[in-house]
Image 1 (cartoon, rainbow, N blue to C red):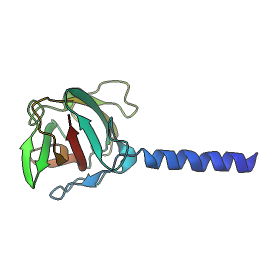
Image 2: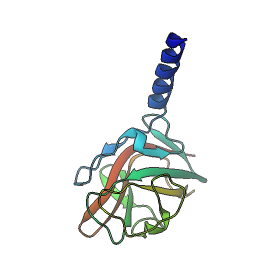
Image 3: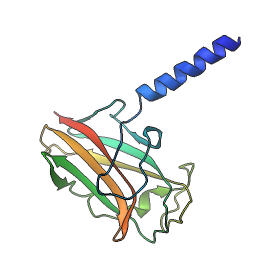
Image 4: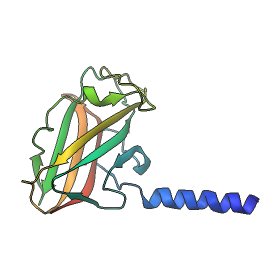
Length: 159
């Protein structure tokens, strides 16, 4: 029975790693690097997200800010050939309505306290006007002094 439990545990870990979203630290951000188990994006189970136009993708991530944040704003961009392009309707908007408690059950909004754990839950539309292209998605939440959280993921937009 013990070997069965061990084998099942190993299988669960392998399955979780196979379905983890590859997240990279933002090059110009001082925010702590997130791990794959702290970010979940629908349509991104492997090392490259495939986002289909005319659909909506959801995102959930863990935030544990290193300092207090009175407000959080979204810095969401698509980087194509090293050119950052803001995602219309998301870039520069308040992230506060999408902040939940650590379990992701109750909305708590802003402010965020240093060392506390929060969950950010949102969704974004893949508009039909977006080109079919390989890109890097840059997802940052912060204020004028810096990021509470920031990551980048490789992605592809398809028809």
